[in-house]
Length: 274
Image (cartoon, rainbow, N blue to C red; front, side):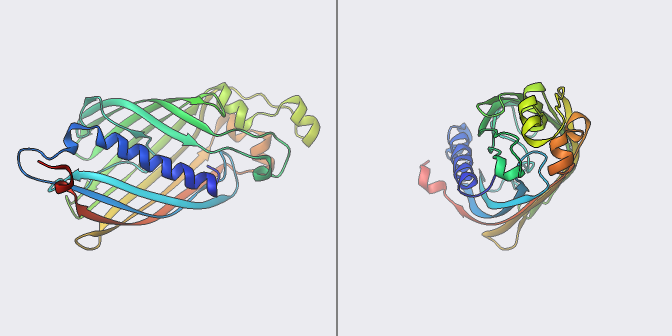
């Protein structure tokens, strides 16, 4: 994702989307037990590749927002999963629902060559996930790009989850990322016109898996109402993406990401009534 003002706007949009998702859930209002809702909100610094296949990371804001029942364990969400909500099932077992993610635009100045811009993309789709055991979750996402790359993309993931209810939650697991021909053409293809302008060979990649890697995340309370969130990820481009002249000449197969945020929690049950 590109950085700067664009990323700030996307972070704000993501935070608003998460708030909207939680606000329509039935669990958001206080239940008959009289327990309230714990809201956690904060922010920090995010490091992500400037665009898919980039050899540099950019610095941007990392928002943090979560709502959970008072007395419930800290929420587990993998650092790279889309914003979504369960329409079928529940988060602790089998769940299916819609998801949305944002992909920042790639500008030619980010690459350093006239390879063409790729516009901002809203990726909408669905996810399905299941806890195969208490500590093992698998998840699949499929999304269609609206604007920008206009392609289909998706992720397969597995996470090993450790938690101590209201103290910490840690996750780590492998990733495999897939995209169709439209997505690969947008970020990794070289048209004859671009070849003439850059001296790169023309390149028409096929769809398929374009990276494999792993990601880890940690949410840790460091006081009664204060916590930290951190994550680190690595993806290795493979297949036609790795062989792209754009990646080989101007980018890198190694894609690193990470972030650190501070958040504050408070009981907001009284704000919503009984």
